[in-house]
Length: 177
Image (cartoon, rainbow, N blue to C red; front, top):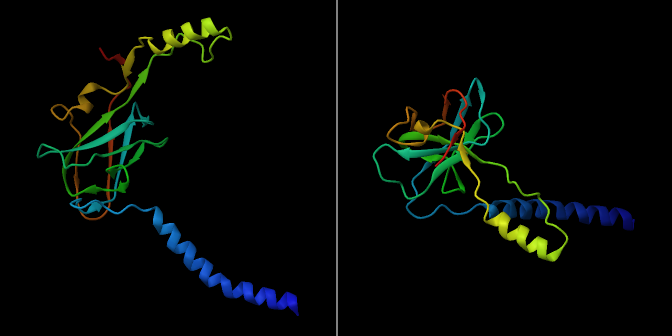
């Protein structure tokens, strides 16, 4: 009988446990800052050279000029899709007309090995030389797509879901000077 009694008391605790878990799962969400406008879901797909562009930064800049006080951006995944967020933590974008800016860069590989030498004197020199190494940075998307004066990409965000696909042409690798 003790076994049945224990089982029944555990069943009585289940609804309370579920309620507590539901409450706690909502605690991760940050409150929207005062003055932040309503946000609407926005998904932007970027293609390049006929396929998805992974790892690109997609930013929305208001066409009216100025900024809205929070960054509105996202980074593309393996499918080339960026889920746009405002102020990093808040999914979606405020209503309005935006330029769509796309950028992706990479740094030239280091000439230093990833591990330092074992000798302390050589390790100190390796460390100093490696942190002062000058490496080229390359733009992997045409510069025109990262400037509000030259981009041909734009989107209007409105109530409801906002999805768009843009192509940024053929791949490039231009050193940024």
